[in-house]
Image (cartoon, rainbow, N blue to C red; front, side, top):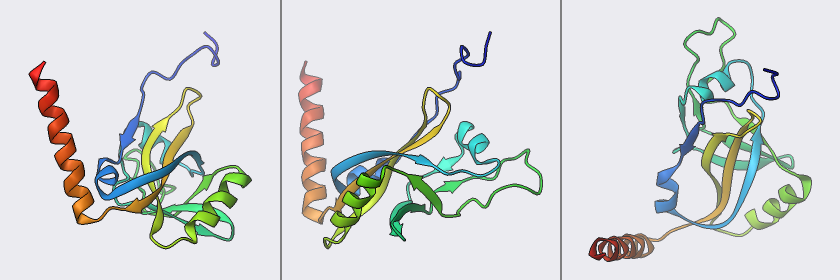
Length: 154
């Protein structure tokens, strides 16, 4: 069996459930990650926390901060720093579009989901988001409860 025929058996999908409660998503993107050393091995083991992560622009490039990829247990002294800033790979036109929209007050970029695609590459779904007010959060909880009650009736 060739390497190209072989599919990666384990699908990894880490979601940021906290983000949908805290933010209203305006636009979503899929970005690649620049990783070092043993980071991909920790991602494949599912040892990632993206709930505290956020993205920022620096020198026309997009970075993710506070994306916690745990230290690989079987690594040597070449292990990675778990909380380092990681560069996100997007097309130039997408970066320009995000940079223009970030000038608006109250908008931020949050990570939604980290996964391994079919080619074995780590991808991060990010969203341009606006923070919800307290009454917006209450309304989303209320609508979710009503929807749940409707499903239970049938």
